[in-house]
Image (cartoon, rainbow over all chains, first blue to last red; front, top):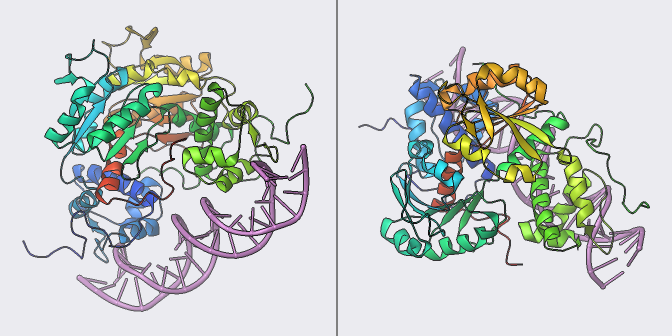
Length: 233
Length: 233
DNA sequence: CGGTGTGAAAGTTTTCACAGCG
DNA sequence: CGCTGTGAAAACTTTCACACCG
């Protein structure tokens, strides 16, 4: 293969010192999602204006966001979907697959075990744990539920780096501590509590009731949509 | 009761013209969550510094955020938990209960039907719908699954204003259109697609794979945590 | 004191606007 | 041309710092 790409960053590398705003990274995921859809629909190139339009952002915002990571576009043409998808995955770290440990296999945990969307983005739930002895040993979605005692050794042996915490609120901190002790580097927390974690462990919280609360506010105040919804394509 | 409260806004009302940044509203939900926990733990008052510390924010930020909506504190004392909780609920619109319609009762939908966290914040899933005739009529979590044809009349008769969309990606836009046609004012979208909605319909997206993606990025770049995790209390 | 509420300063993110390229 | 990449300007958000209050 020749050198068709504009200058881009090498996998996993970032503009050295740079500090990329978190909000930029969250938009990157949206760009990637949209690009994957476009590519699947047979579209080969897209301009910043088109991509932004689909998501309710400006063309300039799309270009500035991408500009944090390198140069991916072709003047007069736009971006090649396949190239940009690859670049975004390199940046986000999802060109290789991630093994994830799930802690807490209740209703929600079981549903998440069955969710196909993770695999599509290269995440694989490699082990599931629960404190309840009645659940241990059961097989859910082809995965044998293990006792928490096996967390640390399994994390090590399977090269797991991320955890999903799907336990009740009053167990969450304790379970998080166990994940940290086992050597996990990041946690998605579905429990409605703030976790106290060492600085080197990343975390993302998903509070389902809070999502509804935000909607409640938006609906009751008829909140002006700032960068509103995308119009029809 | 005398007039112990400092000046505050009336329920559902906002600083008239004002435009409250979305990020402020998202922190409001976190304040509320923390306050509820503190009150349940028997704490009666809290200062902006303490509250911020628990969430990894500065004291000034807490005060500025609250300042958008009124004056809730007592100099030299802090905030009374019970008063502030009530105020936050007024602002967020959760002092009254909301009826929610769920569309799509697969794995994830069923798990969400059983999630107790919604009720605790005054949301009640009042009806569930699915396009699959095999599911219609089944009873899940005490709720009879209805066909989509009944969506509009049920939304009207039960005073439903919010919807939760828990269908596969390729059905999401169609289902969203039905929710809008039924008169719903806001949608929480669990499908990994961007919805095209009229401007008067609010929406919040929850993409579970994106949450993992964000974590992947944070872990691979060892992203400096800006306003990091709260230390131990 | 200890703590709020709030202007003013600092810092950050978005938008603008335009040179340059295929 | 049409579109990218990018400094410079504008808008917005956070932090600072201090008057004031109980």
